[in-house]
Length: 115
Image 1: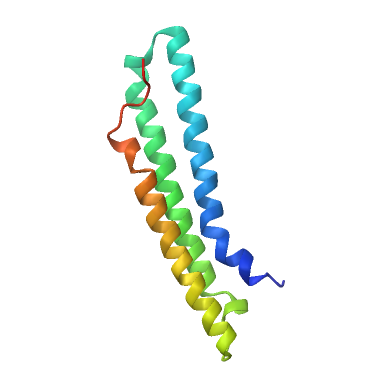
Image 2: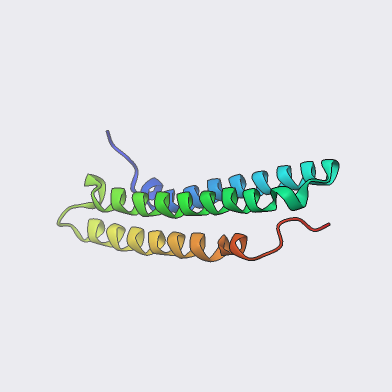
């Protein structure tokens, strides 16, 4: 199955964007329910654990994408183009891993819902 190298390059940031949507959806839904039912203090710990789980799953997924990219036959070869694509893909994957860890680290300490 032939995969386009550019699609392989951006796959780490596709995982990042999915995690962003998942975290934002989970937090917004939980905070909305908490405001309506006034049970924020009882469920804040559980919400934080769910958000941390999503962040950790995203980090693992970005690492898995990186490993998949390293083994991809589309990026292996002896040509200068293959070497260039492999270098760019590696740098983009590292940037996606850094972005995932940095952007989503706030779920560990920031206030979950503004009341």
